[in-house]
Image (cartoon, rainbow, N blue to C red; front, side, top):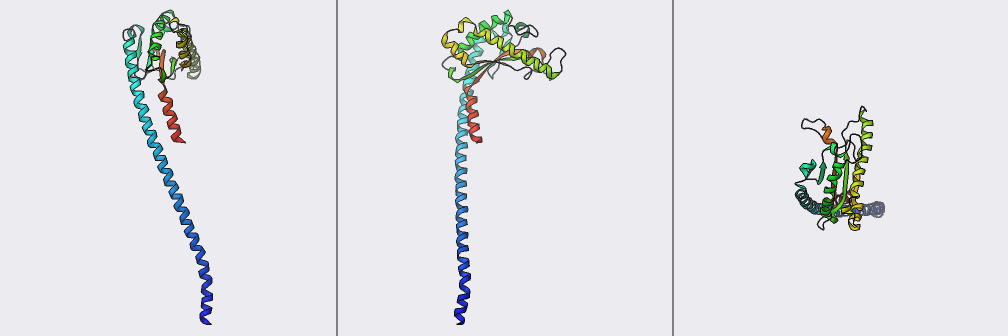
Length: 245
């Protein structure tokens, strides 16, 4: 009778611990499953990052090659003209016209005859290079940019910025309208390409130039630039955006 009593008292304890051990085993299996899923996700993300890095290197290499070739070709085409135009070509594929007194009257947005003559010589040759089979599909945008100094008569910096924004936009638009009217680029195919890519942008004094001592270059800041943007920038943005999701 005593043995039966002990057995009857021990059995409830065993019945209590068996389901608890099953619960712990189940929790361990869940934790293991979560860990496996996490590890797989990490590996998947690592693979995405590696693939993205490879794509970025590929695009950067292609862009660097294209930019170098285009810079060389533009430099050779306009080598003899740049000094008389007071213009320069930068490695970032911007072409800067640096003589404001030849381009516009002070505070005005009407293209002067001297600058019209320059544009008539420059723009058709410029577009011919950009539209060549080597570059045409890679060109996303050709920006005509108007830039000013930070000054506007006796205005404070903020209202001066607004007035210069208006002026720079009007000047960029005037240049765009003039080059669109050049007969050498008026054939249907060329005009379609230009209308899809060439834009006018006024930047006020946001990108003013500085002198060697760090002061503002008031004359140099007043300029017109032609700037090329390639499809590589958009491709890189899409890849980086996908990585961020």
